[in-house]
Length: 288
Image (cartoon, rainbow, N blue to C red):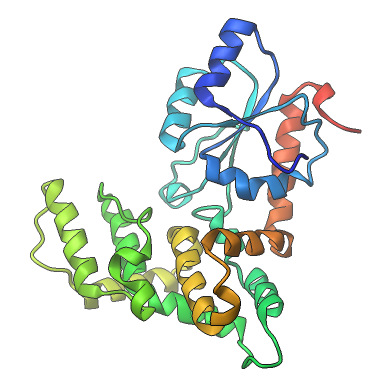
């Protein structure tokens, strides 16, 4: 594939079909930032990219709205799983492929990939870092946020939470969350939707989280990989300050993505995308 992948918005693609009778099929992703990670995955697909359009939907709601209304071209859509498998609301459509976890970033914050990046960054001057202990430390440091994500899912709170960077609650400063600011934010957002709670019961929230884990729930099922990535970035920045001085979040993410195939579930994702293309696209888009 080319280094820079040209793409169309979903509206542009629909208009191209209406005006120019463009018959090329398309692979649709939720947002433009998704292409940054998906383009690495796409290198494993035996597809003729001159015969396929890459389309950005502008978010899951936009994609689902057009999907439900009927899209006027052949397509495969790649969606973040979010809470949908837990809630049993995944669309039963062969053209819709969900990630294994809440977001695609959950793949690149896996133990295997973190271990590779640590190997890349480490020198003989650095104290060795155990990637397993690092990941456990990250999950412990964002535990209050995770508790609230679980509570939001269980109570169907219509508030914005998962899409907000941990920096809002001072994570970058102390590598932990400011509980007072986090609680103040959540209660304020709840009041906007007419849910008036005096304060959060952190003991009860932790109990609910522990019970969920005991029943088989895992962090990657309900915590956005984007927020795990936030925590990982700042933890690595603390461990390797000299090395990380020249690496912003985008460059760090690029390093993680370079090891994407260390996560075995990516092979399953590639197979799912390839099979869907084989079943729904004309043979001319396939490279034998």
